[in-house]
Length: 126
Image (cartoon, rainbow, N blue to C red):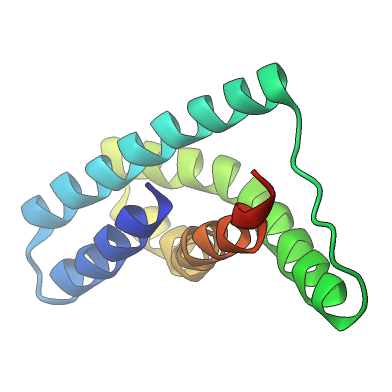
């Protein structure tokens, strides 16, 4: 789901840069919906089954933990920023929407790309 969101985010930014605002809106709502579904399923799965431990040690573990920490930190920050950005868009406050979206976009894209990357690190341990 995160990989699909990453693609949608890139499409969304391309659309807004081409002044195709209605298509941009639809793509961004789709990305938001997929993100919400992912978040619900991820939290539910974690509550039911716990977390998966990354077993390797050394530089690989350091790399994994660095990626995981940056992913989780930005994922936590994305949630309120996305809510604020969407609220401004719905209220047609596009100046405020755009200012926050310029900060939100790279963070959300990073989270959407590093999510599947973290999963690939953990895949052998499921």
